[in-house]
Image (tube, rainbow, N blue to C red; front, top):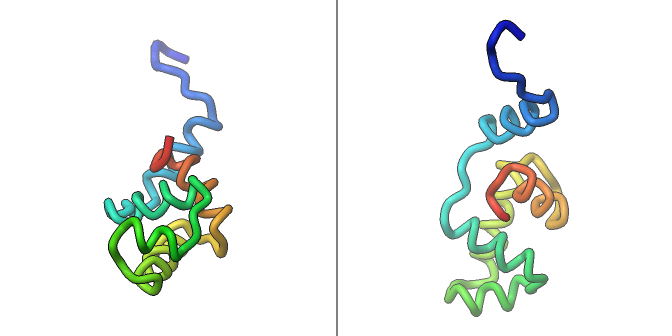
Length: 85
């Protein structure tokens, strides 16, 4: 190790994944938090004061950023990449 710090490969992989992910906007994070609570698009829209179509647009943008195709995968990635705790 030559005096350096050892970082497990699994941790480095998570770091690399997070570094390659574009940041979510504050509104996208808010949508993800409501999603984690199990709310529907309609309820999310009501709570955020936006239309259901705008919620869908936020979700579409999140899916593209995380390279996923569904809500569960997006939530998993948001937690893994440190956007949700």
